Length: 113
Length: 112
Picture (cartoon, rainbow over the protein chains, first blue to last red):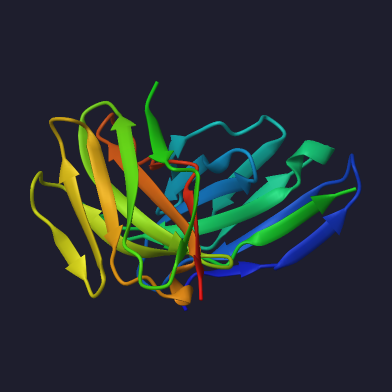
């Protein structure tokens, strides 16, 4: 167990809908990262927050947004869902150290039908 | 554009074999390279490498980095069925962000 908690584990929804994925980082970790993993794309970086502030942005669609709250948990909001958004969404956390490693949650499997 | 390329994409071996997984990278101002093992869902950390030529070892697994040639290898000796997984390589550039760039992974299957 990495100590990173993601909910829900599975999500099935329809095109056009909006969903929220939740992540609680490891105790003491200030950084939260969101990644999308699909079969042909591997792990794609979406966005990173540190202590409530956005620190880095990857290939995140405009339909997607995220935030990190004062208690350090993070939410990833996906709206106007399309079939191609079906993927495994991971949250990871780290201590913001010089050479920190990432601790991943078990992911949320999103299926858009 | 920063990128990480892993090879082979997949590999099938028998128990007891030794395997070598490759990771090459092109990143701006390289900082570190990490290896992860992904069995079912969550990738789990294996190694972090920052310096060339220093081998990291953990049991039957070992890894080394070559910063001149921009690659790393992950060796697994005396493979077991429990080594079956996707092995991911990631790098972190020092381009002002904390973005990790992952390769697509090598899918290893070890047959009994």
